[in-house]
Amino acid sequence: MASRNKIFTRRRNRVRNHLKKVSNGRPRLSVFRSGRHIYAQIINDETGATVASASTLEKDLRSKAGVNTEAAAKVGHLIAERAKAAGVETVVFDRGGFIFHGRVRSLAEAARESGLQF
Image 1: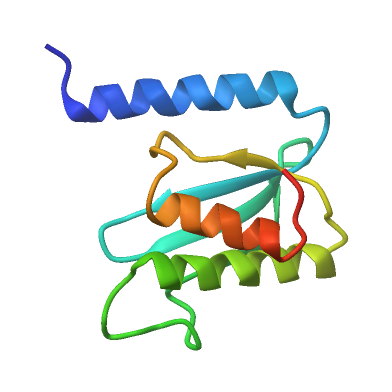
Image 2: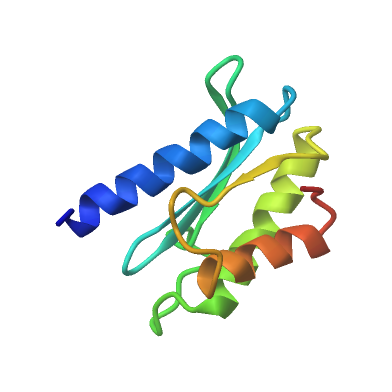
């Protein structure tokens, strides 16, 4: 029986391999979710550079209540604004092995509402 870590790693690799096939040169919106925080980065895989990033560790997004779907939505709005400022309009969404539910879904929907296309 495989461990949870191996299952997660296999799922993350499967998602990333699929994204490489369908990206067509678009940058990748990568999401990482920990127990306490959520992070989002827009990465240009051709150059290997991070174009924009946002997380709940930032001063104006910190809250004592922890990270919930509302905080994830704020990160989604912020990453979309920073992407537009960097000249990025369309991205490929990389959920990074996390299930598209809860905080990850909230971040994605907020980024879409703010004008980021994926």
